[in-house]
Image (cartoon, rainbow, N blue to C red; front, top):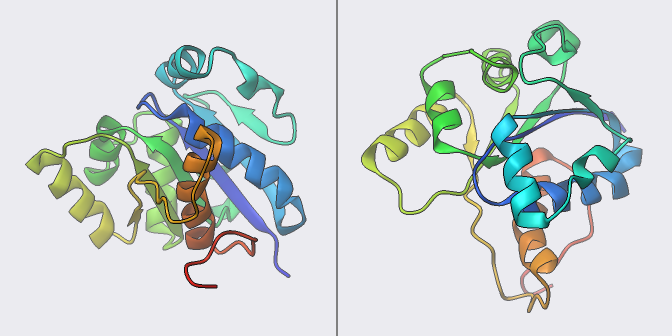
Amino acid sequence: MIKKKVIVAITGASGSIYAKVLFDKLIELKDQIEAVGVVMSDNAKEVWQFELGNQNYADFTNFTFFGKNDFNAPFASGSAKYDTMIIVPCSMGTLGRIAHGISNDLISRAADVILKERRKLIAVVRDTPFSLIHINNMKTVTEAGGIICPANPSFYSLPKTIEEVAGTVISRVLDLAGFEQQSYRWQE
């Protein structure tokens, strides 16, 4: 099995629970992973603190964290061969910068690299409702090869906790990223 090199970007959109559940799931899938590089915006750290009541993102020592402007991070270049980038949650501002090729921080630069190298970019957008600008930016990123995966949970697995609800989205994200995992499958 070829192990994956994954970038996880966390922006300041509401939905820190999705990033936390993704971190937990990636730890469970460690046998399929070579490296996980993480970059968080300043707003992401504030939203995590507000929504989850802690700064536990710093406790995920299995991953390598990079500063938001660290253009020396390996995934700032295509030669590092990171194959997947998951932006969770993805703010509409971040999506807009990616759609228009504005690489003004490590998140938007890494997304630009992933798209130019024809690798997998998964943007877990969280805003609602969408304006026409948002929809057009989603269209542009999709046409460039990215995957827009709105943070719309499913309920047919009968989730009981907020983590289980968020897990329905993260299971889809992990499927899209190509991970082998156990998760609820409709009618299986």
